[in-house]
Amino acid sequence: LCVAIPIYYATNNRCYAFGVALLSGVSELIGAGLGWIVLYNKMSDTLYATIFGMVGGMMVSIVLNEILPTAYRYDPNGLITKICLNIFSKTHT
Image 1: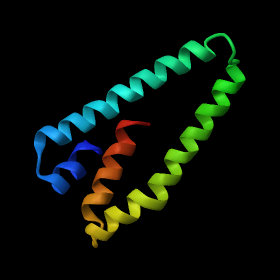
Image 2 (image 1 turned 60 degrees about the vertical axis):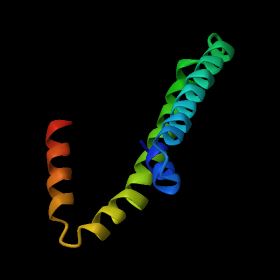
Image 3 (image 1 turned 120 degrees about the vertical axis):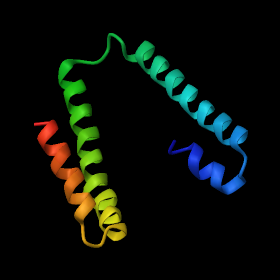
């Protein structure tokens, strides 16, 4: 959806947007497969933990610096944003 929706609105062509999104998804699968083949026996548990920690930190940074400010910009009172954050925090703790 993150790939298809902007392309659809830019071109107004559903088939093209779907094709580009499909190509994007397939390329991710191929990259993951190649990465697994190359690194299967070469990565330690410590390196996995380090990489997962870095990626998790990047996700948290994106949420705090980009997504939440955008949510509050479109929801000036913060009502919907706060409700959604409250629901998410109660279901995932």
